[in-house]
Amino acid sequence: MNAPAPSATPSPGLTTDIAIIGAGPAGLFAAFECGMLKMSTLLIDALGEVGGQCSALYPEKPIYDIPAHPAIEAGDLIANLERQIEPFSVPRLLGRRVESLSGETGAFVLGTDRGDVIHARAVIIAAGAGAFGPNRPPLDGLPDYEATGAVQYYVRRREDFRGKRVVIAGGGDSAVDWALNLRGIAASIQVVHRRPKFRAAPETAAQLDAAAKSGEVEMVIPYQLHALHGANGALTGVEVADLDGKTRMLDADILLPFFGLSMDLGPIAGWGLELAKHHLAVTAATCETSQKGIFAIGDVATYPGKLKLILQGFSEAAMAAHAIHPIVHPDTALHFEYSTSKGVPV
Image (cartoon, rainbow, N blue to C red; front, side):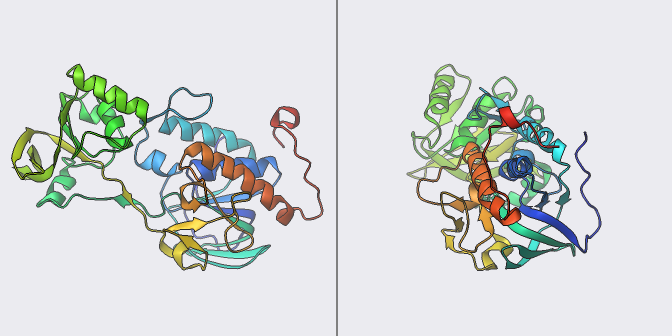
């Protein structure tokens, strides 16, 4: 069964049991968990495709902490999640941002920037990092190099870097992961960081250290970005400076600055939900926000002990679905059964 096509025209009166805001991994799995409990869902996302950051930012990036997958590329993970919800024929409203949310448990009304009106008994917010964008380095002439692709913040296709001299700046997981994953593809890889310690998984940090010792990657430490050199958007070099202000030139065709994403909740911040450091505060056991009937899962949600892992978002999706069941089916007791015994509802 093929996934339903996303709606291209405004829908003035859609009705569903649960409106899911965000069609990233957590949102997709929430649609599956709700479907398993015989509750209908509708996915809404500001992006033009499902998958959130996995599809938009790094579809070819391997993910290593998904259970039963020693490694799986982000794009393949999303494809599998889509196949998993096929039996439930989940409608999608893509390229839409939810601007308004009103009502109460059992009778919520959502409005999008495209004029859609959705009626839902409960809401799951799985908006990831919200309206995310890269933290850009303060370098002169940056927009010219961004326009030509000489400066990029995401890696969508590794082959685009074939034979290129690549400079990677940053000290987190993205910088380390792509330094490792572009080996054998890029002509050269230089990693710029202001200190020897990286904020990355210990195993991948150890792999980067080994790659540096073998000459596959050059570590440029302790340095930080200072200036870009080239003409007409074509990059020829990246100038870096150490902590004493001494500069060094790195030959480069492409700069990948990985300084994290800026998070903007957008309209969500104005819906009267309790916030904690730009995240939605939820009850850990149910993932319910400060407003009854509205739940939050994945990166947008926070509570004591929260881990920002995709697999934790999957767990939160299941907990939210079970907490919502009494709202959608108030007269039906939920007797939990394993999927191995109940199968997929039809």
